Image 1 (cartoon, rainbow, N blue to C red):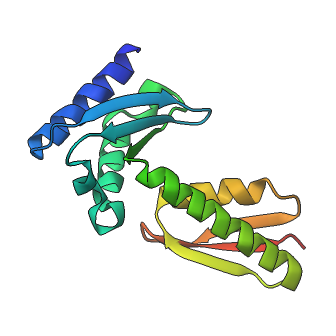
Image 2: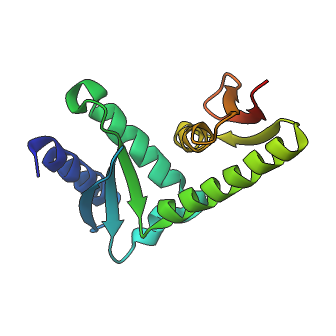
Length: 150
């Protein structure tokens, strides 16, 4: 584990400790991110309110360890596989909306979504020739519009 990853692991362990949680933190390298896996007794506390604590922890980690320091690597914080399941569900919904937009010619809306979820949607749409996606709004949560290219 490089020193940046070790610092991230220590940082998350310290934050969890301040929350009164003694959990295991491990990192897995993926093609576009470093997945931070949190497990152990009490990890379900991070999943309350649809994983808002996970989202907050992810924002804090990615803010504290800026891109200049890690290049294109993005830290993805998950606990007990919660985010992975939500990501799979989001991709399935995106695929369904892509098909609806293709078949009907009518743009489909998703959201409001946080930046991480919007990125997943945009990446999924980019894989389909002839389809486009656009984020609309000026707040943290934005709507993604999926449509076929003219």
